[in-house]
Length: 243
Ligand code: XBP
Ligand code: MG
Image (cartoon, rainbow, N blue to C red; front, side, top):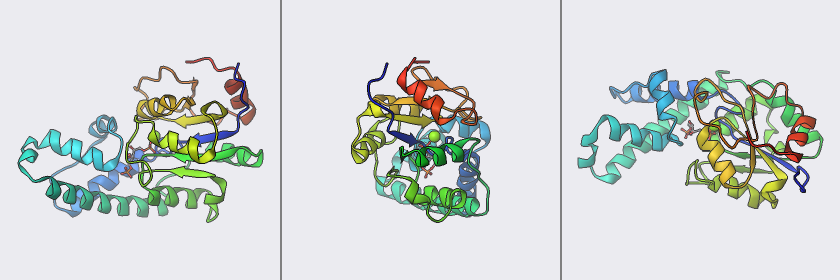
């Protein structure tokens, strides 16, 4: 039985708030094409590459895998190229989201609004870039989307990417709450490991890219948040039974 009452919900973004990875993959491929690179990430390869959190880290990992001769190049030239690819990718992704390419997953908006109305504090703990969060939530919630979130942790605040717990630890500090007063929502094993390493009980909603991941240690694994009202979350939080 958890002694601390539930006071905050901490949401991952990609794959949790919305099924974004197909749009991310398309944006990566668009950036490669814009730079006349003979790279193309299909679904199967991208599913594998999602084992690496962070777009820039994913590009570097693939570059090393696909072109071992990368070692001969100087580090700065590599980083400059990765930064350029990622900047083009982020611009393409932001545009796609603004055009409606991505929608919130079932039950997410209802939970955000009922939790906010009920006085729970909301936070975001993601690996992605701030511009991607803004594009998604501005379209899904509206221009005042930020007022719903007491704290936001992302690539600009947490350079140590999931499964490192840094971004979740930052949110606990920002919320000034113990891990026991929070619940996290994730879609991937990297995300689950990051949240649980920060001591936060985690509800997992897998998606087509992460259904094969190991979710041992999750508080609950559910197909989506549609059938998960706030009252149910409070019950799970009060009586945690690890999955
Ligand atoms: C998942 C990620 C991100 C995205 C791409 O983020 O690993 O890197 O795949 O976004 P989350 P960037 O923690 O929200 O699940 O290219 O901006 O990194
Ligand atoms: Mg995710």
